[in-house]
Length: 547
Image 1 (cartoon, one colour):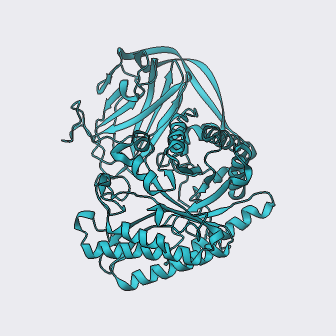
Image 2 (tube, one colour):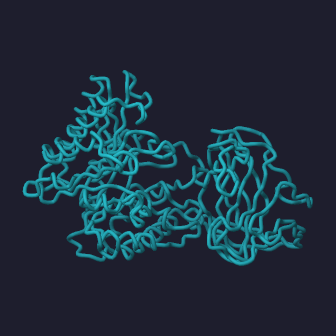
Image 3 (cartoon, rainbow, N blue to C red):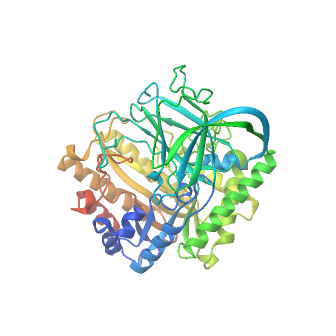
């Protein structure tokens, strides 16, 4: 594919593909061979994001990232870094915990808690589990909050995996495959309340607290399970005042039972001041970015320094879309959000959030400073329903961020998770606004990159109708999608000046399996599943790249 690009006319252009790092490292289904043949550059789908590297205790593990960099280097592929600052796939419990001063006090009082004796630490996260069978089954689609106090003999992390045990989908060990894998939270030697907020994917009847890589002992107390807007009861005796532990079991632990303590440890937490919170998060962000720059060792020279910063509304009426925030998303309590969500900008400020990320990236980069290119990346920049206000707002925010005379943002990334429409009027309007988006990006003077391009197909006159599944798509519809790919790539080359052309990234190399968490079962790839065959989309891309 990359050989279709005229390098004399487009000398700086990079054609890239996003992929699963583990599949690349293992060459699953020949993915490494395929991307080496067809692409200049590769992008990690998730492995270089905060939540994939930083655990619930704040500890960072860059082992998989380093392997990825070494394998890419051997294959002669560059890597585009995705992403340094974002509000999703974070570690909110850890980050919120940094912003309070905690002091522990022991008072004389009788307290019961549930003790699990673990023994030696396991190799896998699932090796040790405390399981609790709910008294009332959770309803699929409803929102739930699970809170519990936890203490252990050593620092580590504990995850929550809610399960539908009555499902007919069984794994090789006979347990249910219908499991939600919620995030890990940090556990210390002092009592600490931890929580998970989630929407039930199944009729959940069991909670599994998973701590397989810890050893010694772990204690639980004051379990509460609540449904949003409901007074239903889901658990009994959460504070273990009685010695009844019906519903509790374990796997991989040597024993468990009620312990009576004559003292209760109470955690007194004092919030930091607004200035202290900002400084603390600036430190945490700097530590994270420094670690990533150390792990990539100057080989990754282009980055999404900030991802999806903009909110799709202008509530303060200043002419620009506001930044993402708790308030804009109607979240009153930062600790009561969906797993992995943390808005750094709510505590650091709209300007300093981005300026801090840019400054940290430039300070810790290990290569030639002149080669480092930092992009802001966002979605819906091509939107026709608001006449491209989001891309115009993004350019306005870049001007604000750079107004200090120090901050420098090199490029704009437009994600373009789009659809091709059967309705000619809708399709034409979308194409017109893709052109307008490229014109706004070009006028900014910044490097321009299509960062996450993939495409579905929608039939009928309802633009918000469901996308057609791959198995239902006709050959004519495949061809129409190919023509749309060709249109996008050609317009990029036509409108974006050569000196601003960074490149184009295809986000989904193959069609999505039906069980995929991203556009499941849709014809989003330029190959069929497992790279079995090239699609019409491949031809459209090739025609566009050859320009």
